[in-house]
Image (cartoon, rainbow, N blue to C red):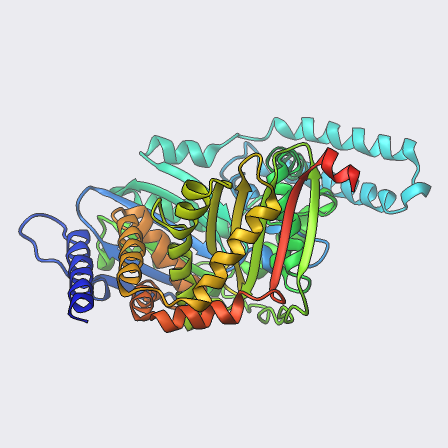
Length: 508
C-alpha cells in the first residue's frame, strides 16, 4: 500500500511539474493553471471564442471548428461534409475570381447542365446515351470557359505571403476544422479572410472537385485492401447510426452531389451557434476580441436543426465478415461501448494502454515477442468518433505461417484475462502515467492546444473537458477495468472482420 501511494504521488508530482513547464511563458515568470489562462467569450450571433495567451514566440495558432461531420449527412448525400471542406478553399465573391459577375452566370449554367444530366442518369437503362454524352461535353465546355475567371489558390497565396504555415482543414465523423498558424500581427487579415469565407463562399469548380474526391477515394480506399476492410467493418458494426458511413462518401453518392444541396448543407450547419474560434499564442484577448466582433458578428444567427436522434440498437449477436483481396491477412475486432464523458470510456482508455501502449504492453509482449504470431497488433478506443457511442477496436495482422484465426484466439484470451485477473497497482500506475504524460506532451505547442481546446468546446460544450478527461483517467481502478471488460468484451457485442487472400476465399 505504501508503495502504491508513493507511485501515485510521483505520478501526480510529475504531472504537475509537466503542466507547470507547459504553461510557463519565459524563465522567471510563474506558471498559471489552464483554468486561469483560457478566456472565453460568446459573440452576439452565438459564436464561441476561446483565447489562450502564450508569448514564447510572435505567432498564433488559429482554429475554426464546426460541430458538423459525416454523421450529419442525409442518406444519399454521404461525402457532403468532406466535399464542402474542399470547396471552402476555392474562395469567395472577391477572393479566387477575376470577375464574379460574369463567373456566376457560367456557374448557373453548369448547375443546369448537371441537373439535366442527373435526371437522365436516374432513368438507368432507359437513359439516352447520346443525350448524356452531349450533356457531359457541355459541362466540360463550360468548365473550360469558367477557368478564365478563376484565380487558383488565392487564399493560400495570401496567407503564405503573410507568413502563414499549416493552412489546412480536417473533416471527421463529428467535426470539421480549418486551421492555420500566422504571425501574431496578422489577426485582422485572418478575421477578414475567414469571415468572408463564411459570409460569401463560392463553390466554384464544384463538379471538377467532385471528380477529385472520387479519385482521392479510389487511391486512398478502393485500391487499399486494408482500408476496404475497415470501411466494411464499420458498415457492419453500425446498422442504424451514421458512424457506419464513410466520411469520404459512398462513390454513387459523391457522383451525384450537386452545388445547391451542398450550399444548403453549408447554410444549415456552418451556423455561428455551431462554431468555435480558438486562438492560442502571442495575442491579448482584450485587443483581439474587438477585431473578431467586427468581422465575425456580421455572420447572421441561424437556427440549428434538431440533434441526431438515431441510436445504434444493442447488437443481438456476433457479426462476422470477410473481405477477399490479393493482400496479406488482416483482422479487425470491435466492441460497442459508450462515448465520453461516460466513466466506462475512461476505463476503456486505460485498457487500450494496457493492451497496446509500447513494447511493454500485453499485446506486444505476448503476441509479437513471445509467441511471434502477430506482425503487428494494436488497440484503439473511441472509433470512429466521440459524439455518440462508439467502438473499442483491435487491429491485428498475423505473422506467417500463423493464421488470422490463431491470432484472433490469442487476442480474445487477453481480453478474457482482463476479466479474471485484477490489474496490478504498479501496471495501472505505469499506464496512467504513460497516457497522461503522452497526452500532455502533445500540448507543448500552440497548434495542439488549439486543437484540444476547440475539440472539447465543440463536442462537449466545454473546453474544460481537456482537464476533466485527465482527471477521469486518474480515478480508474482495477475493479473499473474488470467491470468494463466483463460488460463490453462479449461475443454478443463483437464484430470481427477478416481480410482473406483471394485464392483462400475462392476455395471456400
